Image (tube, rainbow, N blue to C red; front, side, top):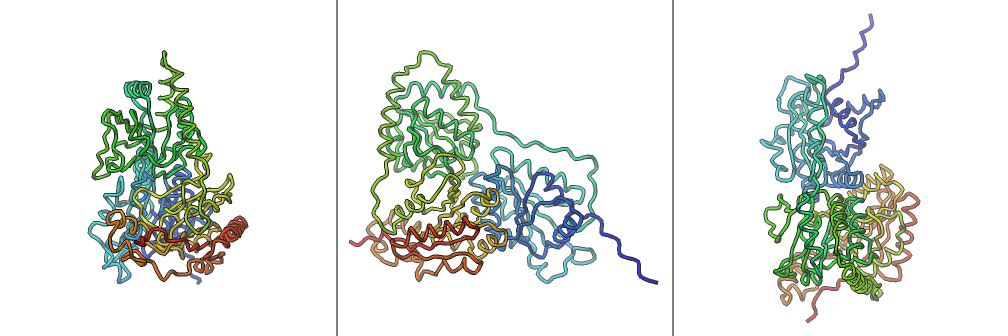
Length: 570
């Protein structure tokens, strides 16, 4: 008598988890798998077999790249994105990316397996020697300072409620990362329905500005002779980009982008006043700090004592920063696009406005800005400014630049939101490669260009990144501005010891990255195009060839040996 066929396994908590993510709109799950993943692997197999909607698994062989991809997808889609890593060791590798997400308020949901609790006797219990050494007393403690919420799934009946809670908290204003731990025994247990039908929890929206605050700020602006707006992040909202354009234009308010992480205002806007706040802020009588954690360096930019300063944004005091003491006469916690629209409405309601003064200020600011925005002569060579100019000349209206430090922003032409992203203020290196892949995943028709230094390229885990690019058909262009230095380290040393011994060294201590690897060869291992540029005559043709390759569906890396221009000779 033949043996009875084994029954199909019933749904497990892993099945319920994936299906709940899909129900919350998750298109992808960025994964770096480990020995805690078998229940999820099996759940994906069942979903594929039975046609059950679940997030597309994106296998990423390094956690920092996985978090970077989730970061990029979250920024473009404006929805939380989920990554999953292997227990505590995978979490440790993901912390750098999590710092970036935390400081930039990006809703990345980082989930991680947990070493099995039970030593024997149940499906999912320990069956590998590493299960003992990998267990931690408090795995969530590794990231607790960086996340809005952390939790460990404890019972099969919790799945829907826990997924809903992590989504609602990550998306609530101000958004940010959250951490969810998934023990293997729980994932492999049979799924259980909740005690009652699960109802969704709506995320908290950013509030509108208070009417009294808007009136006060409008008074200050109308009384001001030299108002200025300083922003870093307003362009994250496309609606806010348009509102800022209108406010600055209608009321003749110059706008400075200091350390911008987004395209905040068009670079040919008559009120765009560059990237340096010092000249305007030191002469201002009213400053609006709009979504900017560090609007200037205090030692370099003293604010006039009688100048009114307002800080506006989702978290205008940046309460998660241990120390930040920029003066604020008015702090307004609100949605930026709604704030700008409401402020415009308040200003438009005023009578007796001196329109002549506003017109004269507009003409003066626009005249000064035309000079500022003019293309300045740039020495032809492998300097950052010239490389940036040549590269920018190849961009079209569907190009997205991901800049991790080296691109000269003065060469960037911006006329729309969403065409430029820069690194988190935390500066966790290696962000751009994962970010570029995440942006390409969500914007498949765009030409995505990552501008990185040689140090940040190494931190970006290029081999895993190029693997994912090929495996997922996500061709991006990576341009390495290779000055063979930790430039940030050396510049910081020069700022403190301008006449010191390190300033005179051709190979400054702790800053030299020589001998320089042939970075362009790494992409070749994943079928990409690699080009080295060591003479300016090669630059334009190399970049053109690389852009063409990417547009034809092949990833490319251009390794440009840029000049080292900050070593003192006397």
